[in-house]
View (cartoon, one colour):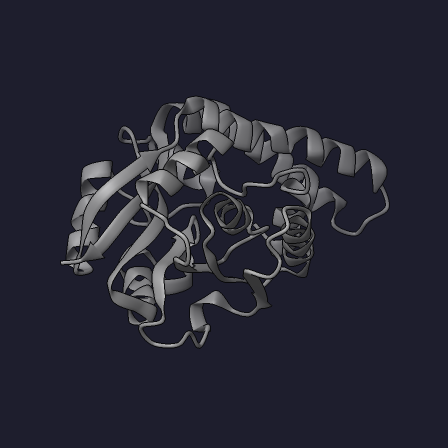
Length: 246
């Protein structure tokens, strides 16, 4: 979908992926964060992860995103949580961000591996800015079971865009990293992420009947509901994988 549709649909979200607050906190523990850890978050969205972890673990870091809407929300959140002095937020194309080589303890990209034209390309894009003993955090969909052909069209995915959980591990291995840990979304995580967009989108349609994008947003809402209940809840998984160089 277009960036604007993305901004509208997730207007009421803080976490822009199918993760709950509990899972976000668990991921911070799993990643073994500590005071002074330096994180680069590519496609950070509203930077909830970066802000929450700065508050809970004392980390510092940089969040990169292309959306002014999300970055404005991220800056407000950093001020709200009192971590604005430890969190820097930059508008940039995450796929071309000129990060300092070897500067970060953790480099993350959750749910946006399109920045490297897929999982393997994104991992290879992330590695140069990572310290030798650092870790990557990559959030990626995978298929829980083989979807029918109609599911690809419904989601707008290509047949090779994602694979099974085991196939995702194979892709990480091919990119030169090993999986150390993982935190996976569950069905409730997906419902809270996807279903909570429906009300936001419906309200926007009621409030903006003359907007030139209204028919596009209406079509997106209809596809979003149908794809989730017909295919997503049964077939589609999502998780964050903790990785390091092999």
